[in-house]
Image 1: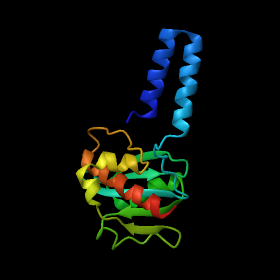
Image 2 (image 1 turned 60 degrees about the vertical axis):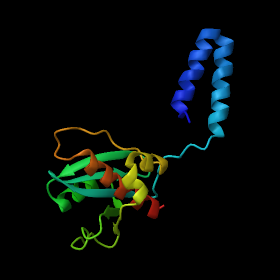
Image 3 (image 1 turned 180 degrees about the vertical axis):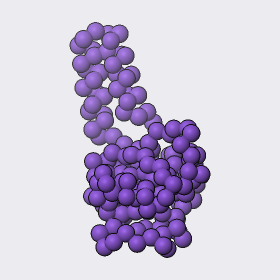
Length: 165
């Protein structure tokens, strides 16, 4: 199935080839199909959440805000990384792998969730995240984490967002 961007680009290309009236008709048709499509809606939690994963640099975190915006964070110290994100927006939940949260006490307003890997996520993490409405932040090399670390942090953030919505 083509994504909405592919459908829109194809409609514009068809319309350009056939003139302005055809362009308008093609865009209206594409928009009508998009409004009835089964595409996934972006993940928008009711509170800001942070998914965390250990990495070579210490910790990589992915925050999802109620607007749906995702941001990437890296820090050597777990609590320091959480504070860095908390300075930008109050967190409602933090998601980590089972066993990682035992020593973590963030106060009464932040829920700490243990997130186990779903077998479907392990098989195809990017598809699993996309189906859940998660936008994976851009991967930057040289920051001390691997793609797998980033995807695991996204999983924790996604599950935390789903549980807090």
